[in-house]
Image (cartoon, rainbow, N blue to C red):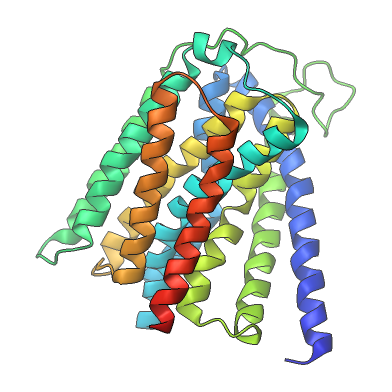
Length: 338
């Protein structure tokens, strides 16, 4: 690749990241109003609406890779995405929240514990661990009828959504929202413009994310990265970029519960939907790099569960989750060089 081509890749990479961030501003603003118009609590808005919207594009990517990929490498890429997504969320996304809080000198308000927010987040981590252990266990054995177990993961996500929708109302869920960007003069915008803004923002996020991932895929060989190494190290960060951007925006606005709920909800989707697709269309057998990714993810989630169960959230511990990703990167590179 020429220097001109390399420079163009970096420009497109940075440009698409900026577009994703700006689109996420519109997305979070729109999805909050959609949740308000549908009488959903703040927690359900983050764990269900926002998480489903931002996780949908990468789930489609997994579907295309495993169902329509013509090569074994394509199917392996899909399986890698199903494992890489939870890894990036449990390390990079949570670390981003902690880093932003430390950089802006903000603290988690004590009201989060008083309102049971941390209890609900701890419950999400517990359910994720159970589902994650099941998906990893299935990836270690081969037996007839394994594909049918994918239905159980879809049912598990359906039960999770039902539970979130029936969750207790948050005391501050009627807090004032910023005006809808598509209707800035309306004190209470209608559902249609809120849906239009959210949907359009999601389309732009999807397109910009594809450009971002495409530039990474082109930069990988230029930087000497092998395809599998690139898929596990950089692609998950790119595909989980919208959730990370949402977290930054909500933390900046002081909506800490929404930021954490969005990550938590996205992880529940990643534990179920991509897993089901992988089980339906591939043998779902995990090699050493994917098992390493699973182990690091499990360590991160156990740490998050222990913290939330105690009813608090440490900014430094959240920021420290990024160190786990660095450990994973070092071990993965050493594994490939061995």
